[in-house]
Length: 97
Image (cartoon, rainbow, N blue to C red):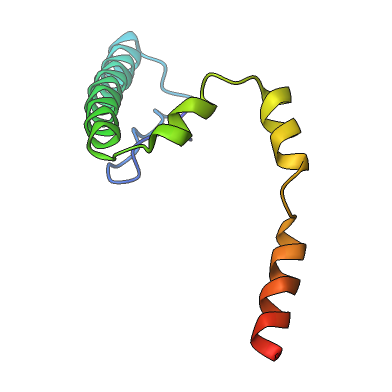
């Protein structure tokens, strides 16, 4: 249950399975609900930070234009470009001569 808990916080310890008093389970559930609320608040904060950061990074117009293309169109454009291996070979040849 605590696999995705905040690594900076201590996970809520499981109560002793033999001690199943209603009060212990209420306390345990209350701690879990508090952790869930904390994680929700952290998620909202992180999303706001991500949104603010993405607005700060300028995106060139030619990159924005790619967002309107389908994956097939982007792949078709890439077919006419040199591969990474070809680029490396070209650079190595240029440096070798």
